[in-house]
Length: 302
Image (cartoon, rainbow, N blue to C red; front, top):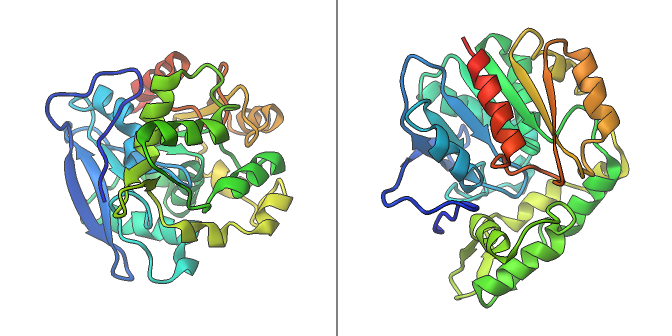
């Protein structure tokens, strides 16, 4: 299933700015990524989405940077135009990271800049832990090695519900119901654009979320009960030491606390900590503060 791109607060380009490409996981799934062309003498940008999101989340950013940088936006397994997993147990961060390893091998990418939102930020840390030399720089968007239990509980409440809607306006209102706290200044056009990023027209003519509902199976009650994951993620986070790193946080975030954000900056000398005003989990990376932070990060990449 596919859906039209609908960048927030920008015009839809007259021609498609990316190529739709695919790679194969170790267990045989056909996985999709958007490939925005750019120079070969710079490391590409690898944009990694959140739990229920997909490559369309980065449309604004990718179109802004395409031509200056190669931008790669994968759909994780079970999302967007990537195949759904045969075994729902493979919907877990270690498997996602392994899938990305296969993408890097196929594309012969030895160094890259990671831009990871939420789950994508966790995957950025995992990739850094297993191969720090390949990280040319990184932006962690509203995520870190310590997560707020309130935010995890909220995400668990809506992920995998399988709601459907008769029209795009109904879909927009549905997204607003679950995300209004995170984006208090959004207007109807913004909610409609977000709906078109996270949903598609289903086979039955109703509008549905663009992910396998079974991804919720691995996001169990234990995850919502603790602020700190069972696995200590600080070593993976600290694998980013010595790299150009930006730590982005939404001012209203209920997933990354201000205290955790400050601790991350303190333990990673040289990292730039940036807060996006009036936004919760997670900034869309089209906010002025986020764009300025990304520009500063890319200016530091050698």
